Length: 336
Image (cartoon, rainbow, N blue to C red; front, side, top):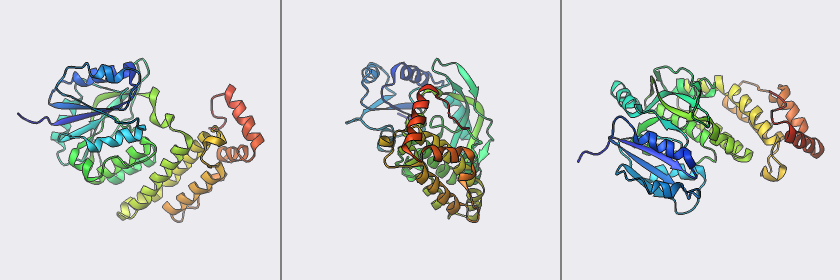
């Protein structure tokens, strides 16, 4: 019997109705030479019980022995048997019926690529389309993909990417970050470094915006993951001069963007949940990292009024308490 070519990997915990829609979309693929590997993570909403009722030989369920974090559950991908090609999907996302057919054609067109992606759409909680992803080029080499990530000119998610299992294993799988967003960034960059990414203009899946992993992560973990990613970029700089120049050119803006975003996230976090992190230390470390990654570029993050205001609010307990009280009645950031 011929071995299936594709493995679709679905980590899930408490998937509710979303995982039912997701699994249905996977099983409805127009080509059938795939396995569905489900990493079940101690669901308490009946997800596991529902999955066990599915009578389909393509489905393989791997229950976790203990409750894991999202990141730990996704890390189990390395431990399970996989076919030649793998793709990962969040339990609230959906594959189009022709997703595998489209990716199969893309692989045949670009046999030397090491990462594959299709265009996609964003959907809301009800499944209605919100918008299309931004237009992508047909090919990205490592410096081009890195530039797109650091300039935020590419829509990149955990779902939809396809790669060879041997390449995934060669790189050690998803790195152990406390946040999947930056772990995904590192993995996709490293995969393009083995060859290049090929893209099809055909839409292949839907990404649901209501359950963003990055939004669910606490400020402390998000900051730790961000600095781990900057450490990765520090190591990557030594690969060649093109990579080094790409990082030097783009990383100041990347760090500035996340410093502002993380400052707001940390500001609305109570001191007891910060793991001793302060805005002052965040801003200082961001500045140090920027100057290390882009030598000769003297970035002054405090020149940004939004960051300066956040630092002022966080400088004493009274202004911090007033801000948190204000947040109860006004949910939007008080600075852009």
